[in-house]
Amino acid sequence: MQPRGNICKCRDSGRLRKPVNAQVEYDKTLAYGTFRLSLGINELMHGLVRLPILTAFAANMAKSFEGTVLPGWFVYAFGLVLPCLEALLGIALILGLLTRWALLTGSLLMSILIFGTALRSDWATVGVQMVYVIAYFLAFLFLEYNRYSLDRIFDTRT
Image 1 (cartoon, rainbow, N blue to C red):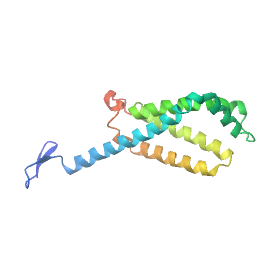
Image 2: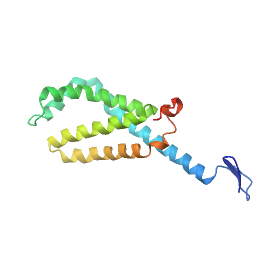
Image 3: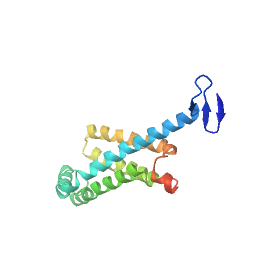
Image 4: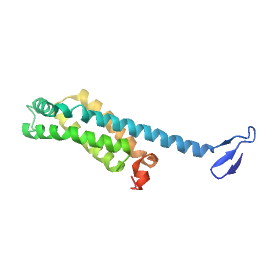
């Protein structure tokens, strides 16, 4: 192959294609974009499905924490805020807007949710929540591949 900028001409076929390293980088950015999109859709839908039943959701959440050290009014208030926060996080992740801050917020939110779930000794749910922790960790770890995002367009340094 003879390199010409970012494109190489194959000797055997004469076709132009990206060099292997460029193709790998391109694939990593696509993989990251689809991962971030999926995580964002998940968060968005967590919030959106709860918004129409917001007060009932908050009341059920408060009831599930009866018998723990957390006061009912606090859990109820948190239950009112949680779906809105999830929806906003989802939108930010889908768009790739302020991605670093969205990932940090999502990671901290998962820590709060795990704390509360552990107070109720609901270890099966804690296990599921740990999967989200891993997803946020991976999204943070590979943030350098956040190419297809509004952050990239506006150069906000993710």
